Image 1: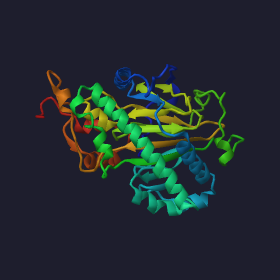
Image 2: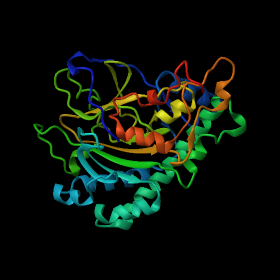
Image 3: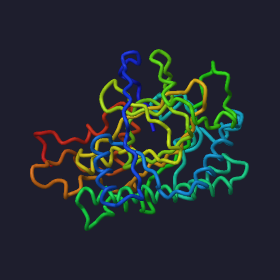
Length: 350
């Protein structure tokens, strides 16, 4: 993914603290459906708990991430450069954007994972097992959420209309491990010890008005849905209006953040907005996050769900393939409103 250059001065920004939705996936189904739809409409974002991903699957993947990012720079660079897959540091995407982040980006198909693990880990089989187990478990949660969304949108006869795009063996989903080292003037280092959890940390303490450093710049995710979990170091923020940022508390640790992506916005005909978000670097502690970007196959045709075009609901976006949209994504900085390139103008035919 590319990172946008911020168009709003950091000094003119405002931080707003509000309670963001946390949804228990094991609660009564009809209530879960209502809450997910409401959260998608109002925030394009929510958290889920009781998601069913085993804690050992999460901790195993987290340990592999810690081990890799604690290596000397020269060893990590052997797994790069990210083109687009592999290890990357600071340079994000191909448009010259930068952030205070290092990462590993992997395809989710087994062959793609296997190809990269030889240069990522001294125990490739162990790393590969951790990655594939994590991806499989989180993909199931993504599909469950998408099926609940489909039901909430009024397509009960085909609740797989969204999830089948991800279950497809040709799905273009990707997995990324992100590591945000603390600022250089801190007394901490980026060894594995800097990942230790501190339950009493103020999740917004790294947001002082004149000292914020961007780890990953403002953007929306181009895919259908993103599921992200992190250690307990804050820094993630979402924005619902220009210049106003809402810190996302990393608690509870066992939760997953769910982001509406551009493709889901298009398929819901704008009903679910893709959420703008960014990461601010913590001055003292290292932040690590793990994200599954659930994507359709490259050839998949993206168009608003027919049930959402009834009555006076005009089609807002022209149809496109994921390959076409992905190409547009890489050709523009993510500060761009990429869906605007696919909007239907008033004088255009659908």
